[in-house]
Length: 427
Image 1 (cartoon, rainbow, N blue to C red):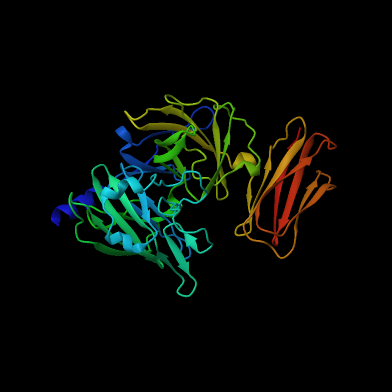
Image 2: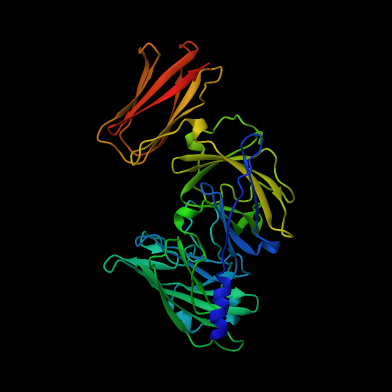
């Protein structure tokens, strides 16, 4: 038992590093981030704090989503050599299944990588239950008890080691059971309950080796934007393949732009509709087999801030190095904050020769009535006006200012009882 506790302590070891803020001639910070040889670590990066948190990638087997009492998701650890099989939609099969049945289990399940939901896992991808609004992969929702009751039996294969696994129920936490195959029979069944708890992280983690929750395997939800790790994808539309790359936090949206010159001080930000919550928008798209693509740039929106990022080096499995540069471009987009109500931005500012600008709205909280955008020249004359819908969401409106003379104007935004005025230069 002492050995297991020591192992759990070592596996939960965390290295936190604040990146030195050395900027290049274009104002970009160079980040030399490594996951270690053979991608031994998961590394979390916080854009606003310029901070790295590195932890061992292994040491856990199951991750239980705990961010909401009304949502759930269960993932396997892609960093381990695990294959997840759905065995039967009859819970009684937990008592009868053996590795000798493997030929009947079908293809293994994987954590989805093409999803907007970081919580989606291999167990949620089970397909044995009939299609229904109440069936969710491994279980079914009970409208009376408001619990998700387990239905599907799984087997996890680690080379020559097998675990049978069944999630009994979810209700603000997970109750599950498992047993290890000892070569001739199953060891005694173990039952555990892991409550959502108060940890300020997206997941709770469980280890078969220790039979317990593994703490401190993830920074607080607000303290990371990008996770450098390994994940499976349907590579080249041929086969499932484990790659290394980037998974984004639910707190950010990302727009990939290609082709675009990377090392520049001026640029054109993508339209609001280009930003995606897909967890692998960055993924492995920045790197071929060796090196990096030199014409890909990522724009990242995190709260009221915007960042521009591109990769500079890919060390591959021998080093696990994933080097990149990034820059806070919020001020360049002239973004103003309306507190709880939302944000707006003007881009480009100054305008380009075509005198067209985009007014970006990210409304967090709907107001009781519509807002407005007004543009004035320096004599106080109103030269343009439009309305902002009183509904939440992210939108962009292109404004053609060709009829205006070159000069400086004032843009006045009124929304939710608040007013913000910004200077706009028309070339």
